[in-house]
Image (cartoon, rainbow, N blue to C red; front, side):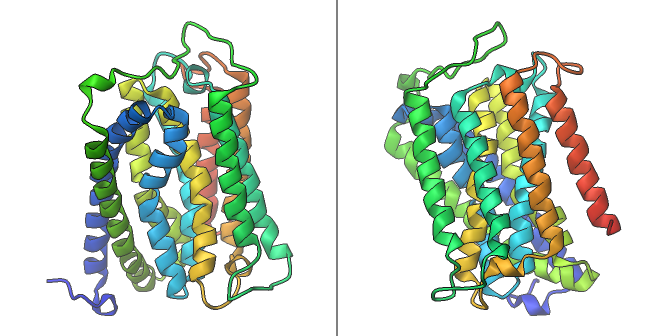
Length: 346
């Protein structure tokens, strides 16, 4: 029997809660992919926008709840490292999805203007987070001015993504390997109210699991003497990002390539808002000025990975190395290097 008070948990009990929550996130995240794909067709918003807003937001709900809960309890390092580490690992997951899609380089087959717009938005948001610590440590009601700026830039960015979906000013060249976003027959799908209800239920499940992950992660960090950055990047970020891995692979297998790429990149852009939400919950001042150097390193690494991905989306290499794009190889090497440096203290 596991006590309700996390302060009384042993290391084994913390690990059990952590594993159970991670499993729940994986199962619910898998299920929600099909729902979002059908909602994209039912509502007509398209796979790229659905990936950014619906899939990206819903699969990230566990992570945002964890970061906000950690910030509320004063664990700024865990809150920020979970957010920034999650973006890095999800970018790596896109390389994994590329390995699963054997017909061609995924970034070639799923080329779209909205996905490149979302990646540009992500780079802008990460840059703002890194810029914040160099501003005065000034807050209004405990909230740093960069927080509303982040929210405004994200909302405007999604507006631009939607505009690029509806009226693109240019289009990528269509090749034999290109898989365009073609809606399925909506007559064979469940009704919109049923899809919406199931979507909201799964979001609630993911949020509850994320809320339960935070005390488990804190116990693991305390009992093992690991830093909260290591726990955030290697444990909570990966576990709360499991839906992105599962959903991207599931979307690739369904042939929804734009949804797979858009879900990862759009989810990454959404995940930057973890930091904004954490700043609101953090009552000890500006959370941006409490970001440790290790977390700043992961933000910089993610910027580099996102830049490589952007070049891959523009270049559209067809086959690369064994059908895997060169950008996927570089992203994988960068992520593994980051993990090695984190664990060795380099």
